[in-house]
Length: 101
Image (cartoon, rainbow, N blue to C red; front, side, top):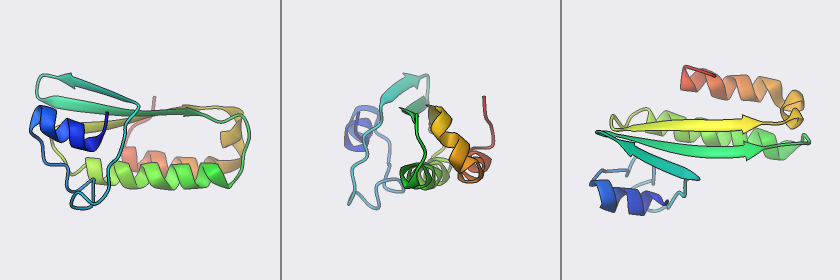
C-alpha cells in the first residue's frame, strides 16, 4: 500500500514522510488497528554488500519521520547472514527504532 493510499483511506497527513507529497512510498504490509496504522517493511539478505548499508540508512530515515507521526508505527522485519558484514549500520538503525525483537 502506498503513502497516498494510506492518506486517502485513513485521512492522515503523511507529508513528513513524503517530502510534502513529492515522493510516494510503498510499504510491504499495512495494518490498521483502532487509531493506529502499522506499516511494515520486510527483507532478507543472504550476502553482504553496499546494498545493506543503503537499506539501513533508508529505513533509519523512514523510522525517524514516522516517529513524528502519532498515529503511525513503522516496523522493519529483516534477517539473513548478509547483515553479519553490516552489523554496525544495522545497530545504528535499530537505535532509532528504540526497540528490537
